[in-house]
Length: 332
Image 1 (tube, rainbow, N blue to C red):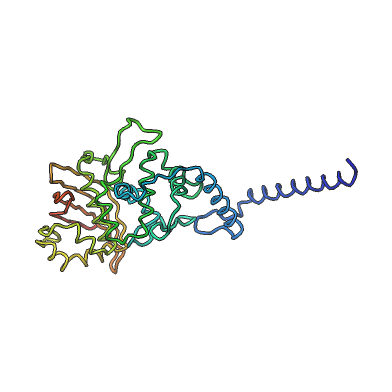
Image 2: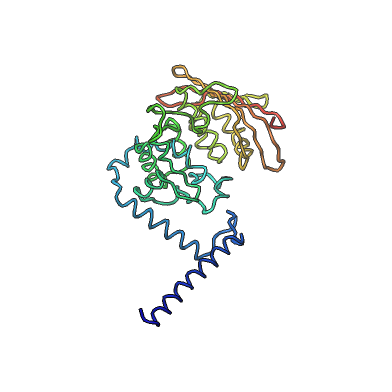
């Protein structure tokens, strides 16, 4: 090794050591802002995005995509899982930004507005993405259910709010097998929120009422989104609505009177469910829900709310035949 080459090599090594030391000192100093409310610099953003995109592309290349992703059954079943597991971050037709989606960085894409590559979507849903808020659903869901959700993602950009709610209501709610880590190898079906399976201080939700629970959740979401056409579709024509000491005795009467005011009240409100019970018997089901509502309208207020809905199965679909709403100030 001649002197010139040795000098160049030592210079390169020394430069690399100094660069690593400077990087370590910068990291140790705490000067780099790690808060989710301050974006990375443009070079860091570009580097991370490039690493992410190339990593997903390389791993998705070997995935065989099922030929039946346009199947109505796949799309319908995937709708319930999307609504329960994804819509809070990735949103849905007719729904504005949620508290969670506003606070995530990088911001999750609105999947109702973009076309997805099926293989890449399957890989991301199964394995997640580090340090992004995207979980690895493959730890709790089997591949067949993940592909159903991918099928729904393919159809999602073409849906309006009403059709989205209809598919969710028909889906049977959130359901999946236990993937690689199941405890009994059987399917599990719950309502739109899988944390409702067992409620503190109350009995488990009857699995036979899962589809009815999904309709109740879809109705609430449509009302909060101001989707009155979707609200109307889920009500029986002879529905009885008991609210504020009064009664409305048909769907048309409710839609003409209190539906708009109820939607306006719920717009932007934060609803925290505290308890739920549900039962089904033949073609009848009831769903009782207790919540705390933080309303942010002209007169901000916090309410403790109780809701009871009775549903009847009409031509294979659940329809709401009675609603009873009551509330009191304080939220306790």
